[in-house]
Image (tube, rainbow, N blue to C red; front, side, top):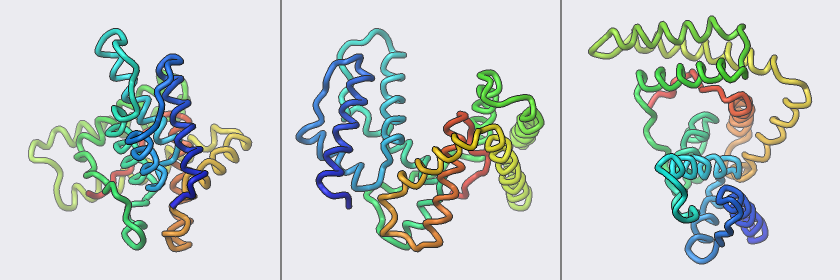
Length: 239
């Protein structure tokens, strides 16, 4: 568990970020709100993950109409934990934690395979339109689209060997996508992402075996690359 100084700094950074998202309106993280955010720090929620959860809440709030009142950190809790679930699945921490200290918030069940394909294709298409991926990614986008069409054509859903074969193909495509994304980044950017990945895993250092921590570090770097370029994880985690 982080010491009191680390927790206080974590809460201050959350408070500052929330102030920025509220257009300068200061919402204090004190009392029960402080306890909530302190628990995130204790459970190892990286700041950037908490920030993305706050972003989701604020973006959804503004989509419903004009701003009525500032967003409080308590309103962001569900989104923060959802993003934390996604980050833990992407880095493989759920399996590693089962051998160590289990955090208070269990990882939620992953989406269905068809839903996973749909979301992955949407994010890939958005990345191509936004220019974060160049034309070298077009074959990957096309192959994911074909896999989605094939999955949808089977009304009973893919099962057994067909399902396992698709999961294997998605893992291979994911490796291709990460390699392509990594090659598009500068050495300076990659070094920065590696430092961020190590920092994000700091809270788990004492609760994981060395080999599990190294695997998580590698996965965290890959996830950081995806986040930088706004790419999906194509590999499908068994639920």
